[in-house]
Image (cartoon, rainbow, N blue to C red; front, side, top):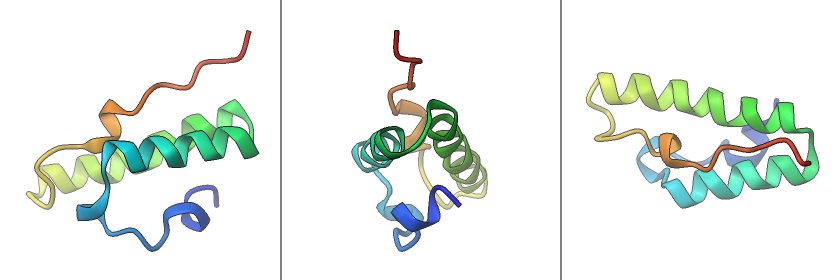
Length: 71
């Protein structure tokens, strides 16, 4: 459970690119790069389904900055 403790109370219509990016950054700061990437992938899938079912106009997670492995 990576995402639920950080954004479990946020409704889909309240997700913004900025909020998703902050959640992703927080996961990266507290966990590993792998977990940060999964923290982006899971919500992206959920938002993708919501877009297809007309629950959201667009997927805000798509515009979140990708997390790169530190050099």
